[in-house]
Image (cartoon, rainbow, N blue to C red; front, side, top):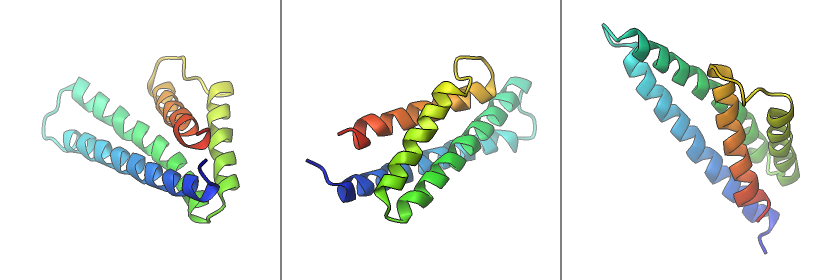
Length: 119
């Protein structure tokens, strides 16, 4: 059985990796936004990527702050709360950039719940 301390360590590692992935994706998108003559579609997709990464990173940052306090239960509750809110209050089934960000975040949080919190 995994202890809460071990889960917290796993959470911190997973959050760090996810935040690094978001930063890398945003950096690649910024390269497109800084091009002299991107197509309108390239520019739109890069803008959407930056927005999606920023949205996800803010949530992950708040969760990481909770994890850094060492309070496993607070961190677990925060993850479960946001996953629940995204499913019940968000609009991840809709089309557009905001629902896409909500879908991505919900998927990440659901994966954390399944792979770490409920193990």
